[in-house]
Image 1 (cartoon, rainbow, N blue to C red):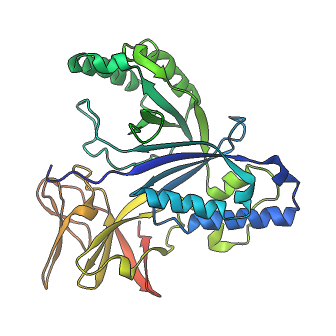
Image 2: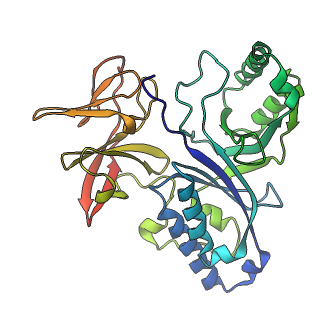
Length: 354
């Protein structure tokens, strides 16, 4: 690996609604939802954010926001914006868990090489809990821990419909890890957890609660799950899935000043990470994941001349045509997705073309 990719800060923010909000006038409730949803929309390009409802699954939390950002300041700015809205005055933080991406200490044959960027699947449910191991676990020889984790992973592979996301909290929060399982079948997850209880590694678990069952929804559907008047269906672009902009829609992701000539930047279009490049004043946008080793291409190098513009992967030296995503040389064989770019009012806007 040529260089280690920057890690992401990951936060799971659980919010509880004050029941007094449901007694407000319907028009006021609707306005509150629109304002709150648009506040989240303003952060769409600055971090990965997925919204979930816990209405009907927990009594101590109603909403959850799964966030991944490049820095703590972005997470703080988002929360400030949310609590500056009228609806924010009726929301309390039920739980807040902070973690960071990091390569696992254990080696497994099919583990993705890049574990420093959150890459959610498109599953209906997310099962989240903080996790703490006993101190005795860390005093075991590494080889013994590796063997125990291999058993743990072998059990997990029997349930292919469940996908795990593990992030590290050591020194950042009260837990050691944050574990989030994505899936479409709660019964499959239940069976997985039951079988894991008999594994050797499980004997060294000190704490793995509270546990949350979260239903993935657009921000508007999640807000409507709170009750009260529904968010207006007449908002046009504003009443969409903040996580996934409409096909064919240009979406602002950065200002022109954010990406000076010769610079690059990772931004987000819904749950897609995008690498933006300014090559002599001309902007290009491609998917940030290398199709070979999953490196972050926003940290790659651009080589340009009058005829070609070549993007070199920072890990294994694979090269792509930056204009159309075609692989040119090296270990890469699969093209990268490209996005259309336009400039308007000093903003860089992109849209998906497939």
